[in-house]
Length: 164
Image (cartoon, rainbow, N blue to C red; front, top):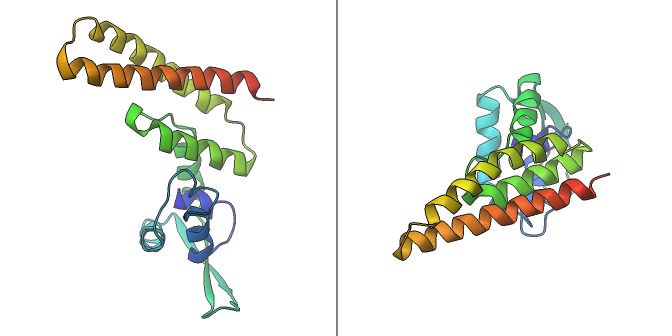
């Protein structure tokens, strides 16, 4: 998420933290504490995915150190944004964040939505089969997973139909 935000253009940790905070555009979906954002920026720099992009004066304190994405960082963020979520337990957070990031960049989410749909349909079918013989808490857990995955498939269907 942090890398994707840096890919939007030169920025600083405070701006990324605000976007991922409780009142931020992405914080509404998945909140990331300020300390984690700054550690992520350090790690992304160590990996060569972002680099220094100069400084910006700040009316509220020290000079802000700007960062920007490298070509490798741009490629990594784009790849992650278009990769379907693998686990149903992560769908709510990760898929919504990816859709929000794609929307922020003006990118078409259709390929992500289609890939996510293709990944989930067989999962729904397999869960339905397994529920038929499950008992006790195993059935409860399978039912939860089935309903979550089924609801996501319906969400994806509805979203694809409403896209321009």
